[in-house]
Length: 306
Length: 258
Ligand SMILES: Cc1cc2nc3c(=O)[nH]c(=O)nc-3n(C[C@H](O)[C@H](O)[C@H](O)COP(=O)(O)OP(=O)(O)OC[C@H]3O[C@@H](n4cnc5c(N)ncnc54)[C@H](O)[C@@H]3O)c2cc1C
Ligand SMILES: Cc1cc2nc3c(=O)[nH]c(=O)nc-3n(C[C@H](O)[C@H](O)[C@H](O)COP(=O)(O)O)c2cc1C
Ligand code: FES
Image (tube, rainbow over all chains, first blue to last red; front, side, top):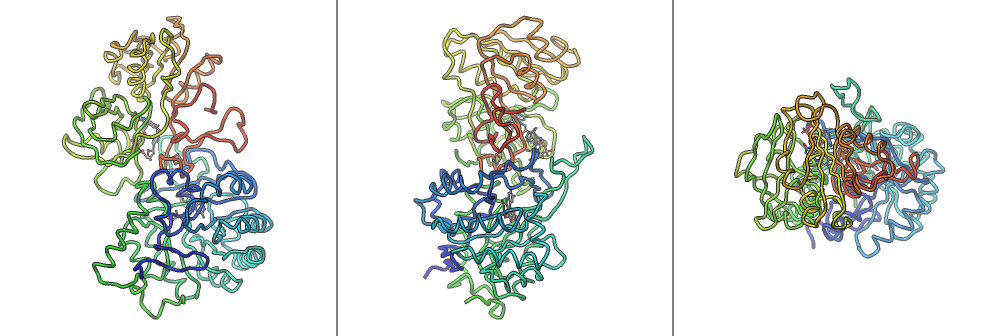
């Protein structure tokens, strides 16, 4: 048996590594660099009901060991994602996790029903945690009862498992985790970016056109690890962990903290080949250390996924 | 496109804070058009995190090297300026689409307009045009005498005019002032420089045929993160867009909103 294959609801992964939403587009560009079948799964860029241009530029800024982004959920909209983006992924076997976003509960329901109905999407990731759009989204991610209601409604219309992506921009992340678990979520993905700001000293204004942006990259890793550790102890749900992963050691830390699989975001920008390199590196490390499976790293009492 | 540890063959200051760096590696063989760019990790350490986009200035496929010219200004470019001969740099490239030299016919008059560190990609472009028998005129603008570079190399390609904003060298003013003063006529224009310069050119010559090369802050450099987008003139407030890194950085005259 493979040391690194993992089974999560809807996602039968040959390795525990997927590119994180928004850091891989819809796979086209990366597909010309390497075989996407090497990935455990792919989290697609957020899809909204209508096409969105997103925020004005500058949309990214570098920070100490990290970056801020305020893309603003730019995407071609539900119809084009179905007619143009998903067909290009037909020839690969890698499971797809479709990230969906919206302003109203009805938006989420419509996108969820249509995307899960395509047959090509293996699971949904409810983005209720994007810090970069003014309306909706983040409100669902910071209010446990709204998050639960949205989860329930999306579950009712989706024909595939539903993961909820949690925001770190809350006082207690476990409140939301427990609320969406009770509402029927099949899994959790965490963390999304942390709200931050960079000042441009020359203009004496925030550098990003949107003023605030979401912090990602190695700088956020300790926060992500802490939150996964907390959530692991409060829910039974499978967890896909992310936030600053850029090498094999990072993945091991996330698994020990309680993640069942991981996503890699910002590191794709520094090294477009990072995901396949990490899966080979992880396999090699486990073999060297004589682990028969990745999950043997996890302290038994906390690993609750069967 | 490939990711390669390129060897620093030379790295020297050619004007105030302006460095010319010669890099050797296989990547040179993949270059298809002048005006493509590299995305360079500026340190052997993991940080600074983001790569820096720099235009390819000169290509020598036979000897497998290329040059880039950059202004050492912020953290990353300052680190680059300290790289010594023989060290290596993690580079991805060539990226993006360059100037469409293949569209130009022999005998055509092409004007190259460059501002500051927008000048480098015009060098290979000028060379490729000259080889095709195109009549090339170059107008390059800088802030002051101390930052002028590559006036002589461009003379090998055709006529060259230089301007400085403070008037300390060449014509006082901007590239557009030189073009007016010298009444420069052209069939086509290729421009690269700061946005105000590109805007001035597109406004002064609205009917011109040609291309501009744009700068934008980048995340990935390969088209996946949507950091570098701009609106199109066809749909200035809508959801249509172009990515500077993978659709550009070179765009047809007046295609995108500046
Ligand atoms: C396609 C393209 C080609 C370019 N070609 C050249 C060239 O040939 N020579 C040259 O000197 N410069 C060029 N630039 C601009 C160059 O990329 C920036 O000057 C450089 O990234 C600044 O990095 P820094 O470390 O000095 O600044 P820092 O302030 O440390 O940079 C912080 C972040 O902001 C980004 N950034 C800051 N200024 C710019 C800018 N003007 N454009 C894009 N990103 C920026 C950096 O890439 C980095 O991610 C080009 C830009 C683009 C997009
Ligand atoms: C440029 C960029 C765009 C992103 N877009 C999305 C998005 O559309 N939907 C989403 O749920 N998360 C988005 N994210 C968040 C990432 O999926 C991830 O949660 C976060 O970046 C932390 O992981 P990292 O440190 O490995 O990047 C984006 C992140 C970045 C850097
Ligand atoms: S820099 Fe990522 S899409 Fe252009």
